[in-house]
Each structure stands twice: as C-alpha cells, then as structure tokens.
Length: 62
Image (cartoon, rainbow, N blue to C red):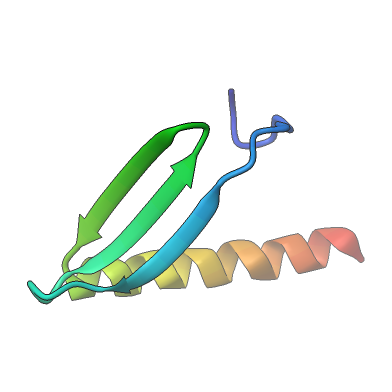
C-alpha cells in the first residue's frame, strides 16, 4: 500500500504529551495499537511536514 492508495481501513489517532516529556502519536485500528513517541523537536518537524502536505493538498484541489 502506498501513500496514494485508498483504503477502507478505519483508525483512530490520538496526539499528546507523555509524562516522560515526549510527544506520542497513538494509532488504533483493526485490533492493532501503535504508540509512537517522539522528542519534542522531532514532533515539531512532523508538524511542519503535515502543514506542508496540507498546503500542497489544498493547491491540488483548486
């Protein structure tokens, strides 16, 4: 499965800080739980990548 392949899989995404000072992305779906912890600077980089991808997606819709 690639980035452009559609899927009927449903999942929940939770994002928040941990007690250990990390940022956790927690994905749950199809009976699978995936916790991913990132240092705050890594989380900021991910946020920048999300914003850039969203901006490109908006341009593609026009």
